[in-house]
Image (cartoon, rainbow, N blue to C red; front, side, top):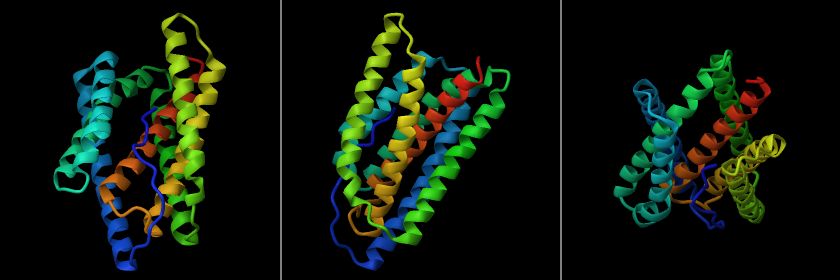
Length: 227
């Protein structure tokens, strides 16, 4: 699971500023997703191994935690975001290749992509049309992220020791989908209510939510395919 970098509380902004942040966020989100897809395709074509893919994902998280906070308010932040999303995309290449090796691999990838798009578009549309304020979810999300990180660490350590907890792994993936869905609601609400005025940070949060939903759906669909 890739961890969102920030949770913040609402402030006030003018409608013009809100619309500008919203427009820039979705524009940058579309560009970064396209760039990630391109890098994932390149990674798949080159046959990059999962070990190297993990290293690129860790490098991406280092960028978001240690570099982006210092550059988010400048044009350099855009370069950091594209570097980060490019690394994440390249890191996903080996994962996608793994699922494509399944008998029904193409169907699994298509279903995961479709499910991710459906979740994101539905939640975004609901928040934008209802104008509901989800700022109350900030505390729940913070606790949820900590809980998911603890479970993820446990699963990784158990796997290294030769233990497998398939039921817990499935529950973890389902939990991540629910948590990331909450973050989409929260982040979109923060934008339209003036709580988030930095479109680079907003894009990063939504991007991570989308990627986490996609990878979690891949895990769920892959396990249920009995391969």
